[in-house]
Image (cartoon, rainbow, N blue to C red; front, side, top):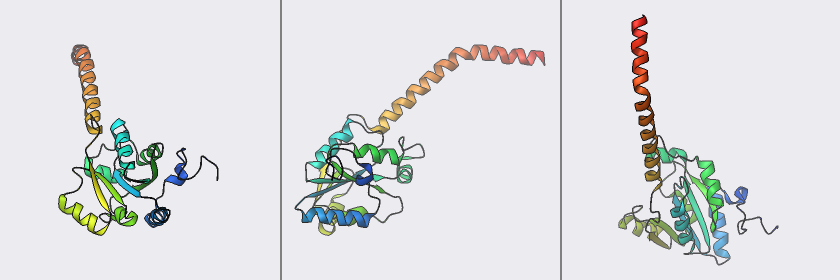
Length: 198
């Protein structure tokens, strides 16, 4: 095998690192454990990838030897965050994550899949999540049934993707209002002239 191919290479190797079938992911996770590796799982939207995402993924990877990342599908994101999200389509978000150092494998999480189905398939040694993801009761259930340990991390971004998008929208609205304010007197004058002519 070439040094830049496969799951353990530095290259992104999207065709190898993206696995859509949860049964295959389950087999890979089990094979990694047979090799004595500790499997880590985390999930999220990862829309408009930023420094906070990279820091979070790096922190998650430190809890084991191989990091699997579940990515919310476009439909799943729209259902949770509204019709204008995600800003970046799922295919690109998946590809971008395979370029992140420490990400071993990525998969897509669909809106209609049963609760915790990826967690059940992977049965990670460590499940990494942010503070608002699971309640204390859910963490206890996850640790009892599906994973060795749930590690809760704080958000690492100084500005969230949603906040960045709001700033862009506000900036666009401000520029539009400035242009309208500049052009409005001429527009009103043109409309009045049209009425006079008719």
